[in-house]
Length: 306
Image 1 (cartoon, rainbow, N blue to C red):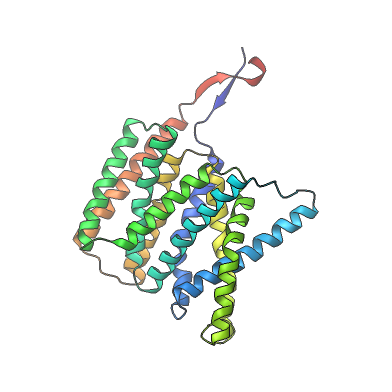
Image 2: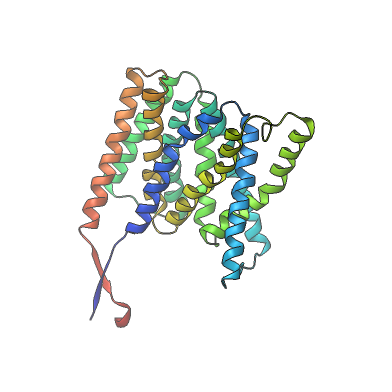
């Protein structure tokens, strides 16, 4: 009987996930250049220009012979929920970064993988191996320690973790491709976002085309900056387990944490250091486990033998 090697984790999915979270980790560098623009206005432009770029790509693809899929009401409803969740997440993130709370965003995205892992186990029946459970436990301990060090309830961090964790669940079950799904999400949000920009222009309080060309360019390019990592993320969700995606999410907050401490000089004491080291220890444990598993593939009958 013929056999084929089956890997439990797609290397392509891992590549997409690592790229997405690395880009997200460097986002503060971009949004810090827009601190003079209200966060809600930045959000509106992110939505509008993301939708314009995606719609242009979808139209080009349609003319090349790839039709837009039929959309039952339940599919539209699911993507409407995803649109609301990602909109909330985008707003909280931009507001926090432009308000000098990069470490709060870091903490939020440190917590997010734990939410994703719990969702993956509870809702999809994904199973973690012993070393993975140990990694989650160490990370959880580090998160609790860091949360207490913040002083009070870190509502920005909790909001980011909950909104993105829930968004991950919706996208995991979404039937459309990464491009089609993201296009539908931004299209759902486009009308209220465009109306808000129009209202600001009518009142004369908007920044766009009234401040300087550099700001206008940053707002427009923000659409491209937004969609690239989201497309990578959506693609990775289809190729690897949600629990694996949850652990990969440590890349983004780690980069944000380093930016907050080393570049923006936000407060960083012994408590934050201990929590940060705990997270990296957890990530190292999960990585070791994944590498070990990839070197011990299981065998299944080949398709021709079934």
